[in-house]
Length: 499
Ligand SMILES: *Cc1c(COP(=O)(O)O)cnc(C)c1O
Image (cartoon, rainbow, N blue to C red; front, side):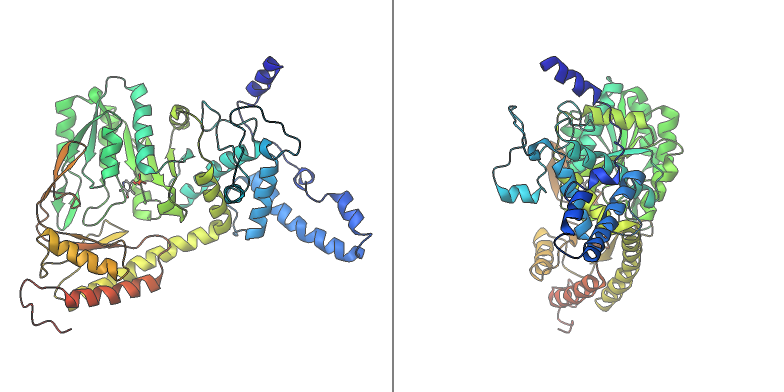
């Protein structure tokens, strides 16, 4: 018994999507059922009902054939029908199943079961996150389909990547997994060159993985903070290319920092044979970021990682690891130890089916126009208070507004402005002081952490136009910001501001 089970598992270990006909999908009501229904209710009514059902079925069949995001988004009923069919294929839902293993997807609470559409097996097999689970054909279909749809979404965003997989970990952990996977190919390398981006998870992804962080301070060009290419080249010479695990660059970031110079860094990586990993946390939604990734892939770009929640409006919990070399992406997926939650994949699958290509493209367009609107309105508001927008044309998501005439050179003043906005239910803005404060992160000391550089010279606040933002959000933000600024202390002329 045991050995024959093992053999059947082996046969399943390389996965290809089964060819499902329409008949095998209609496990709830088959033709015989409909015939019986005709004895209870007039035949033409039943046929109408059956026709309606076949519309759902043909959408599902089309998805399984194409493995792409449908052009038109699906309604919730089709999605629920599909998920129901998939759940039926998992062993925990087999009517007569007798589970005697230690992991049988037994779910105590019916609330939890409902929250997961009765799916309990997660994705992968103990060894591998992209392997098919013999006990869970339905969950395995979710995993492979979601990976296909995620790749389609990446392509729609402007990057012609060749493969990707969804990981149930946020961006920082997925970067850590990517770094550790690269380590197997470069056992002697220990340095990660990192153009400074003041996000703690980036630092932790490097340090927690056991690598040595080499901070490349940004340079100021106009009002933008940009990659210091000379310093990168100098560090490569100093440390030796073979000792460098990778250069970890960033696209999406808070202004006045702008996306790293990916193409130029790609050239360095190519000529020195150093892997290039890109933190594309919320960059999929912005053509400036995706264009940079696409261009850099022509020289060298090994892996790029993005968050599912920041790009696709799902709860926090997942990210997509993607690249242009199938073998490398497969290698990283094989390094993931163990099975994984299927929740982030299921959330993304549901969302992409629901959005459709049209819905996603519309959201991208809307974001772009929101960015322009936010820029105009924030600029207007700034002018009114004797301030202005920072000129950061290379950043397509985040923007900064100067706070030179406000008291923002101490931490309290910043907290004050920030907390006033927060109590007015404005979230997501950040006020960056010029206090030169030292912070310790993972044993390293940073000056003015949050500012992406030691001394930017003047305080500012940031706001971002990210996917899903509405024009109403913009108007409310401007109204509330205006009120807060009107009441805030000015460094000069503090009594001349009308309230
Ligand atoms: C969100 C983000 C991260 C990582 O965040 P997670 O919480 O790990 O998803 C890293 N870098 C940047 C630039 C980010 O925006």
